Length: 65
Image 1: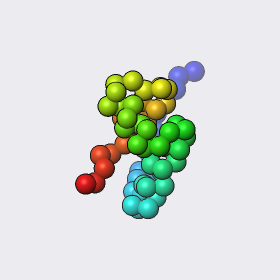
Image 2 (image 1 turned 45 degrees about the vertical axis):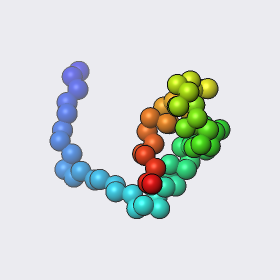
Image 3 (image 1 turned 90 degrees about the horizontal axis):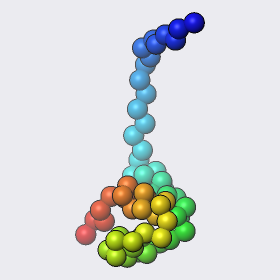
Image 4 (image 1 turned 90 degrees about the vertical axis):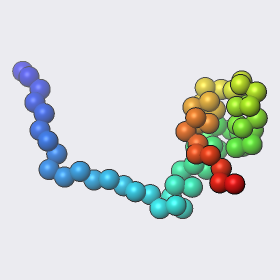
């Protein structure tokens, strides 16, 4: 038995609203158990307390100044 691949007939792309994107970022940060400020401190020190904290920090966009 061989596997076969068929092209999808439709590609769906979800573009979150700014509010949805912010909710997702807030949820990701909350899941780490740290605040964004604490993640930033860990990043500046070059030592993250957990792997999830490091991964989340790497995915966060820069703050708008």
